[in-house]
Image (tube, rainbow, N blue to C red; front, side, top):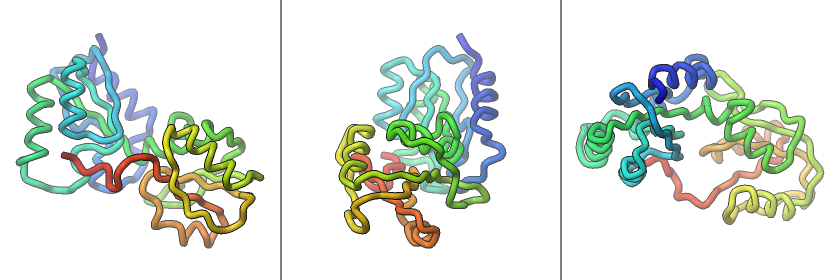
Amino acid sequence: MASLIEIVRYTDKYLRVAEIQDWPNALNGLQIENSGQVTKIGAAVDVSTPVLSGAAKKDVNLLLVHHGLFWPGLQPVTKALHRQLRIAFENDIALYSAHLPLDIHPKVGNNAQLATALGLRSTTPFLEEKGQLIGLKTRASILRDELLRKLERSLGGKVNAFAFGPKRIKTIGIVTGAAGSEIYRVAEKKIAKRRIWPPSPPKNWVSI
């Protein structure tokens, strides 16, 4: 049995939560504490009523998520938020959230993991946001259709792509998360970025 405080301290340090700036509603770190002990850990992209209910059924008492409870901003404790807090409190579930600290971590981060899955090497950080570089780029020589096939194999689902530009890709930029609006900044840097849409709804951080 592990201590919640010990796990939180380790994770905060490993992900550099205190150092990495993020959007205010991310509220990275421990969002809900439990009675203090952890026997089973679960993970999900977003916190939601179904996710918390599933965690309770599996006796999970620490849930790690990418998008936490407070993405919608300040709100009354009613409806979805009330349901989620009630499930967490009644089942002694602690909630820990990591947004940009998880996206940009050089080893376990979403960018790094996708680059590894695609077999990309010698990546370097790029695209500044919130005072840090939030993406990875690398030189490449790969046909666009082949890259899309590799993405679908890596992500386990269909990838939607804007199939324009050169058929052979020479530079690849990876920015996980909702960074599609940054395509103009990326174009200025001459990065042939492909926005990736895994099989999930838009704004998937909206809780239900």
